[in-house]
Image 1 (cartoon, helix red, strand yellow):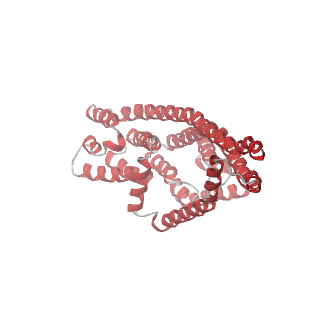
Image 2 (cartoon, rainbow, N blue to C red):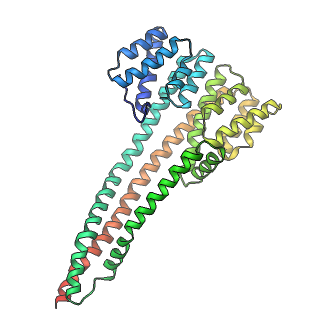
Image 3 (cartoon, rainbow, N blue to C red):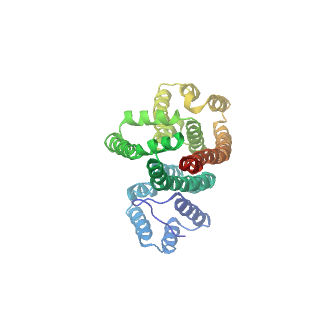
Length: 353
């Protein structure tokens, strides 16, 4: 196995999948944790990756837990070391590793699905924009000079393109300033509760994207809570742990609120009903039934599987819709450009006459 680092010391999702999957396999074969981790390091050839794994291993040998070592390395997300923390505290580290390997495997599959659907149209868009830039900056000015010398004028559609192109530098500059302003705000206020609340609200209200984000976090919530409840972790403690793992504001704040509700003696389902907007009526109802019939563990597992399948189907459908839609939009744009380019040619003979 070879790990590759991305920005900083972080690992790509694909390499995290390989790491957690191989560690799960080694532990499942009966090897001790120390021996398994030594084999992981021995199988690595990249200097940066070996250094990262050695840092984690040395931190473990000093008496720290695996999850705190992952957190200390700075290469893993709260989800990564949060799930490992669940495994260590419940004695089910193998299940936690399997959860993470499955999570990153599915995430990589979903990324490939969207990439495969969007790569071809995006390539066409880039090529079309380059051709458009060349035609506007080189070809149309030539026609404009010819028409000016002959006392004629360019067709209206071509003049419109030239006028639109004249605003392009201002558009690029304005876009750059907006991006710079957003980055500055992110750096200054990115960790504040108000910023997290506003950005989460904006994302969840985006058409299609908001629904997919909700399904993603619902599936995560069901999988993680099933892992905790199935390990006999008290529900109150489980929800407080989820607040540290799932950091997306609407869900992390709901976990905190539900924890306070449970402390006051309220039921889990009553607290979930307050957040039906992000969990969905169906999930809230089914988990209420699971709580009342003492089958919450099983109901969470079923919903995790169902919501994950629904999310994968939605992503596939999104790809099927986006690809022809983008190609159609590109076709319309190219047709408009071609008409604007060839109209001067068609009228040039008439102008000369």
